Amino acid sequence: MSIADAGLSPAEIAQSTRIAAKPQLPPGVVTEGPLVQAKLRESYLLLGILYVGAVAGIIWAVTQGLGKVELFTFVWMFALTTFGIGAGMHRLFVHRSFRTGPIMRVFFCAIAQMAVQGSIAKWVANHRRHHLYADDVGDPHSPQFDGFGNRYVSALKGFLHAQGSWVFDQATTENQYSAQHIAADPITTVYERLREGWNGDAPPARTVETTTTHRRLHPPPRGARLPALSRPHPDHPDCHPTPPTGHDDPHPPH
Image 1 (cartoon, rainbow, N blue to C red):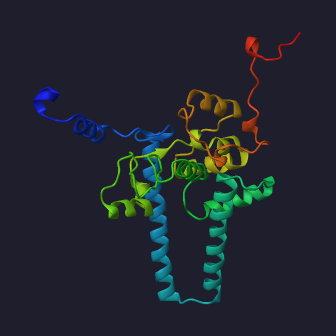
Image 2: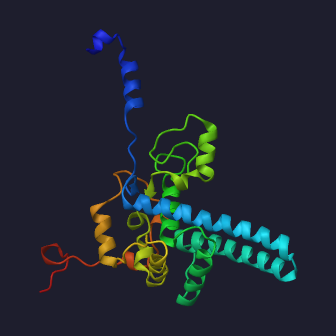
Image 3: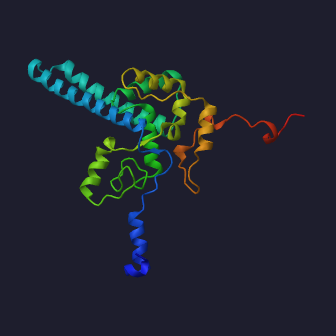
């Protein structure tokens, strides 16, 4: 049937085409394959640990009672892991708001992982993608769009997705696209590899040259605005890629 036979105006045709068109996801978003399966496996495993721990705590409180030791341990661990997520995972590893020595980086890695919110690389990659595409297509936990970029019609579904159900959808972030510096850091790489023993989703270690090549092969879309959090600190190895060789060298040897 032709357009004329259908009796549709050009405006109606354009509107129906936009509705039928599949949303264009930004680079670095994966919707199938082993990365998605690893995300779902980790989500179920971590939530299982949290719920089992909560039930065990209630049983302990009922059968053994709560004393000063239990209350102190609860308050101290809650404060410590909250600090690990806020100052360590968020401010240090995502935004790189400050710098630390190796001992403090080991400390922040440990208390951030104790919060049971997933791997350092995955947390950093998801949060950077959230800032880059906040409440737009590509935001991993937006109340406006699902993981595939489809707009939510139901406000309730959008609310539930943003509050937690996004960890069970079929979309995830490619760590090597949004968190290259985590794979280049030998300290965070140790923590990522330690997860292989019980989760099996730790990414392979990458050298600085590899991550630089990855950025060249998968650049962000033309015209995309990269926030300050996506630019590494000037002292970071990502800012010093391998110099060009051959005829591309701007200063060839004499």
